[in-house]
Image 1 (cartoon, rainbow, N blue to C red):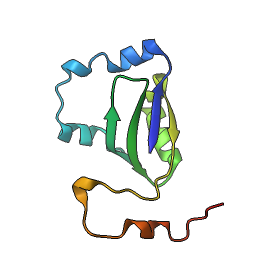
Image 2: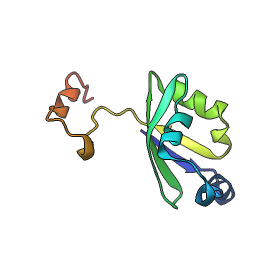
Image 3: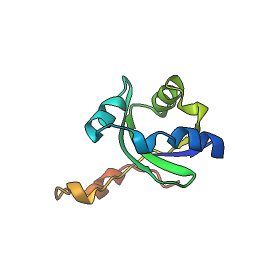
Image 4: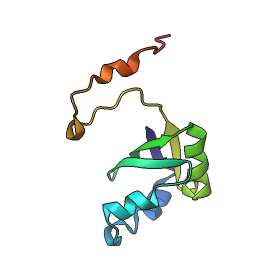
Length: 107
């Protein structure tokens, strides 16, 4: 899970300025945010100073390198947090998600 924040109000405005006029479907968004070593699986963006993305990758470095290569770090800072368990009420299957914590070190 990534928490992104803008460098300042100017870069926030530059980053978001074309959003209202963007002609892009969610299918096109998925294609655009699929890279060689990582994929953005979901995003939550509001008008505050932070937005959130769920990334899938082998390593955190793959995500950070991709963001740097694409120029995103000219606008945002990113903090990454590994996800142990994910439950999406839109995609429930009856599985036990708590089994994901087996072997998790609490120290």
